[in-house]
Amino acid sequence: MRNILITGGTGYIGSHTCLPLLKGGYKLTIIDSNVNSTPTSIERIKKILKNNFSENQISFFKGDIRDKPFLENIFSNAIKENNPVEAVIHFAGLKSVSESIEKPLLYWENNVFGSICLIDIMTKYECRNIVFSSSASIYGNTSFEPILETSEIKPCTPYGYTKVAIENILASIFKSSKNSWRIANLRYFNPIGAHESGFIGENPLDTPNNLFPIICRVANGKMNELQIFGKDWPTIDGTGIRDYIHIMDLADAHYAALEFLFRNKPQILNLNVGTGNGTSVLELVNKFMKVNKCNVPYRFTEKRLGDLPFIVANNTQVTSILKWKPKRNIEQMCIDGWKWQQKNSNGY
Image 1 (cartoon, rainbow, N blue to C red):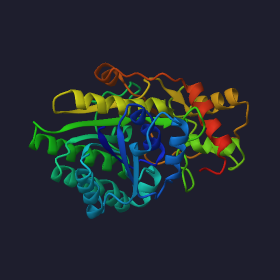
Image 2: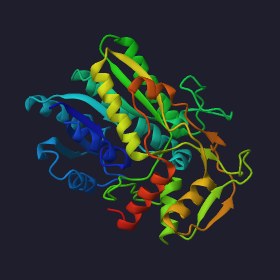
Image 3: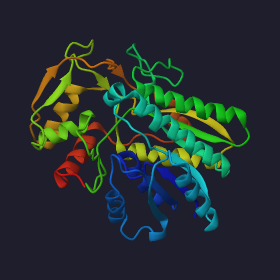
C-alpha cells in the first residue's frame, strides 16, 4: 500500500482529495497545523467511506511544514515501519488574497519557506514525487480568452507571487536532477461546492474571504448581505467572470495527477485545472438562489486591488494528459455547497 504524505490534508481541498485516494487504495499520512482547518474532517471522511477502507489507511499528525524536525520524524518513522513516503500532495499554506496584501511577509514565510523545508526533507529521504497545489492567481490575464499554461505569469498579489516562487523552486530542483523528480503543478481556478453527502465542505474558521462560502452564509442568515466588488467590469453583466470547478472534480484531478506521475518517467507538468467555462458573479448568485430556492441579498461595492475581469481556464492540456475531465456543472456545485451549509451551519 503506497504511502502518500498530504500536507494541509484536513483543509477544504485536502480533505476532499483524501476520498479518491483512499478509494484508490493509498495509505495517507496527513499533516496539518490546523490554523484554518480541523481534524474533525478526517472523522467525516471515514463516515463517508464507511466500510470501504481500513483504519490503518489514515494517519494524522498535527504540525507545521516549517518545522523540519517534525517533517523528518514523519519520513524517518515511515521508513522504520517499512512503508516509506513515496509521494507528497502539497496543499499546506495560507490562501487569503486580501490577507496576503496586508501581511505579505506572513505569506512568504508560511508558503515559500515552508515549501523549502518540505522539499529539503523530501530530497533527504529520496521522495521525489510531488503534486503541488498551485493557483490561477499566478496569471495576470487582461484578455477575454481562456488562459493557457503558456500565458504570461504576472501575479497581482503576494499570494500569487508565493505560488510562482514555489513553482520556480520545483523547476530548479527538477533541472538539477532531471532523472529523478516527477512534479505536477496544478494551477486551479475557483473550487466551490462540497461532497454530495454534506459531511465535508469548506469551513473557514475566520471570516470567509472567498465568494461561495459568503453566499452560503448570507443565504442561511449568518451574514446580512453579499458584497459584489464592482459592477462595471467589461463583461456581460458588469461583474467579474470566473471558472468555478466542483471540489470533487478537483479532488479527482489530484488523484489522476498522482497516478500519472507514478506511471510515467520523471518530468515536470504545469496544468490548468478548470472547467473551461466562465460564470459571472451575478450568474452564480442567481443560479444559487434558483436551484436552492433561497434568497441572497447583495450590494455592489468598490473593486478590490488585484481583481481581474475574466479568469477562465483553457483545460485542454489537463484533459488530454491526465485523461481527466470535470463532470459536475455549476448547478450541482450550488446544490452540494448549500447542502453542506445547511447540515453544518456552524461548521464542523
